[in-house]
Length: 141
Image (cartoon, rainbow, N blue to C red; front, side, top):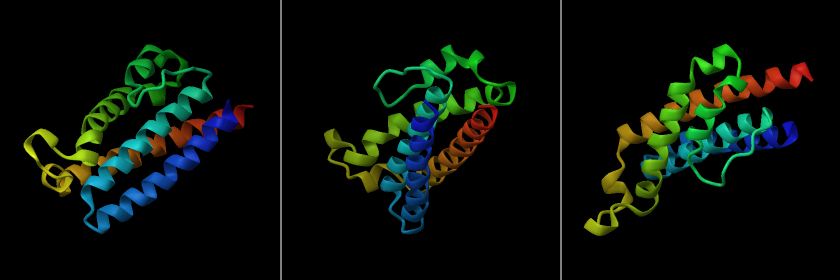
């Protein structure tokens, strides 16, 4: 399970780096999408690291909250932030990819710099917390 968790984190880190680059290039919808993927992979990594199978969905915040007792206190203290970030970014995922199709709006018209800044900040913090947890678990083994 730890091997899979580390692999997910490697993928999450790549998404985070690309999200930051997309933000700098003013490609805000892409920065949001990559940030969402980073958060999703980071959370799934910690679930794997503590031996939890998760449903094959983008938002695993419900599972995270259900099994929060499997995590150390410092990580549990961040659970509200982690779960909120997952929910917020999953809602923006579709908009960042397709825009507001019913209203014929492009992704650039519905996702702005503020959205991308918030998304990349959430991804960076989530990744950092999840990486720290996996490193700690790895040292214990």
